[in-house]
Length: 282
Image (tube, rainbow, N blue to C red; front, side, top):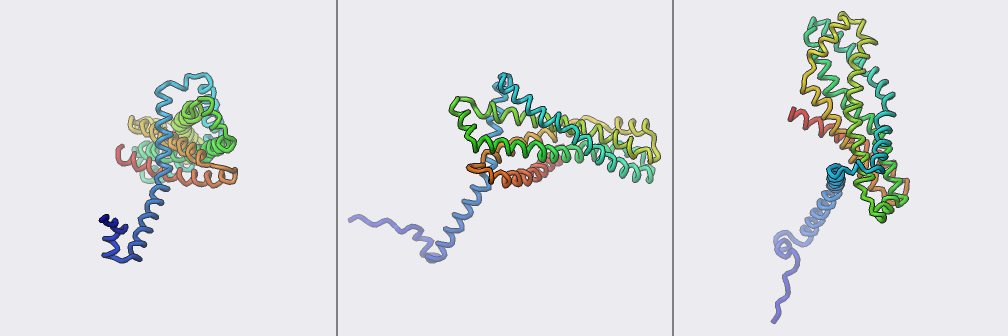
């Protein structure tokens, strides 16, 4: 005689009752759905990063079509952003230089001027400011561009023609952002430190030659590394995130504003994550 299988969750039903088991099942199912929904963007961004790295190692950027796309992306994210970077650098540089010089010269701590300015500008103000400006200006453009390609089925057309997305779509944008981050941050720091002094520094009890010597004396390899590495990871992360957000648009342009807002919020999380990593390892 064939025995009937035990009812599902029979042990739990005996211990807790049918109602309690139903609540446990609903909680587990809900927790699973939330976990999958929360982790999906990170999985997709990891996939985009891996595909981009694979395309880079295959020197796909040497392909004429990919190289032309790369040049256009570099021009859009770096060259066209220079006026805004100059203005922001002069404003924030003038405020920072004036504030720190007024405090340090008032305390007679002339030997700390270079150290404080180098750390505040190269380690924090310049990378974070340039990352935020890059996201507002170029990151939102990438999200919109990828969204339009998605809605108009252009990405599907590339797949049908045998053109890999990683070569023509992912690689040029990630490389352009990875170049724009350090280069714009370097430009921002240079303009902020010296342009800021030329605007408001002369009101302080220090000469330009003394100021310049303090800056150069405090500049070390670690600061240069942070100046280049931190915006590199921030900017490359923004590019990957912007591509991922654009790819999640399914049907209509009405989805794009929501993706832009999500991208701006994710930028804050990215900045915090990179800041924590550099604090721990530098």
